[in-house]
Image 1 (cartoon, helix red, strand yellow):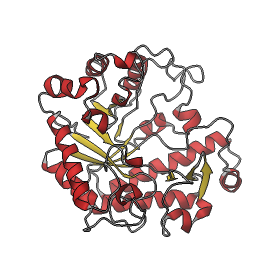
Image 2 (cartoon, rainbow, N blue to C red; image 1 turned 90 degrees about the vertical axis):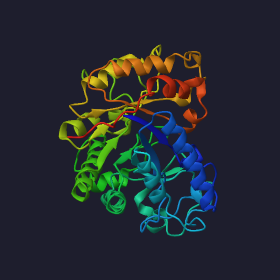
Image 3 (cartoon, rainbow, N blue to C red; image 1 turned 60 degrees about the vertical axis):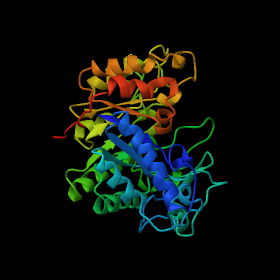
Image 4 (tube, rainbow, N blue to C red; image 1 turned 120 degrees about the vertical axis):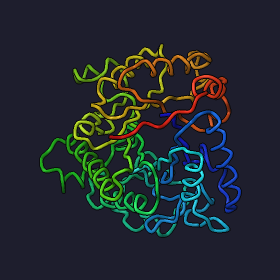
Length: 370
């Protein structure tokens, strides 16, 4: 696996800028695609639903503001970006993974463009404001059902190779701010501990997404890209010997090990955005941990090329090559994913050259699923 994440939220990677001009977006995506194709990338992961909005004509959600500048406004002349991207990606023999954010509904409650038909206006009781954003309440059963229906619609209508979700389940904790889901807990908590109840809510979404996707298209993969630390060993002997602040299990309420054990995912892509010399979360330590805990599923390592130049370690041009070599010599690991597209397009630290001229000089097939 040689994949690149293409983030659309806030126009991080693509589109280059919001515009009504359809050709502007097509040209930009083709430039992006050709760059990665030439660098040996074989899979493109595009964020098609960044914030309960759509980069395709959806019966459930409005057009994304990061496409046209105004949420709900279609591109002109009309075209279907998702259909276009899938066709162009497949034309080059590459896989297309449709990346969705399951629970983020409004990126910025002060500035975001919100259409009248946006789900937050139709069902305001499904959402919780936290840190200047609006999130689906994962404890709300109707909200969870809605998220699954949105994904089913994509799988029904488009020949995607995978549905891909990122690390945002319950929101990352902010100092002194509580996620106010007390009302939902009172309705559905059933005397469970709050943390266990929250994890069960996320478990329910993951299981329903997997079974729903497979009923429609058994060949469509379901992948999850979690935060790179499931749990620190000081909290659980099964965890990694790390000192991460947030963790999947304790803070995001994502029990990745359970999902792997139950077979609810086809692949995982943990985000290991640390350097080898990190004192709290050394790259080698978490790489080894995930290789031993992937439970027979495909494991791809998320690499943070966006961090190039961010500190002394990330100024080292040999850092990414060392990480790639380490991945290739670790059992039960089947490739890598790079965040993000624009970082590789800019050839930060010369790493795109390293891929094209050395590591990815020869083409590779994407891993086959059982």
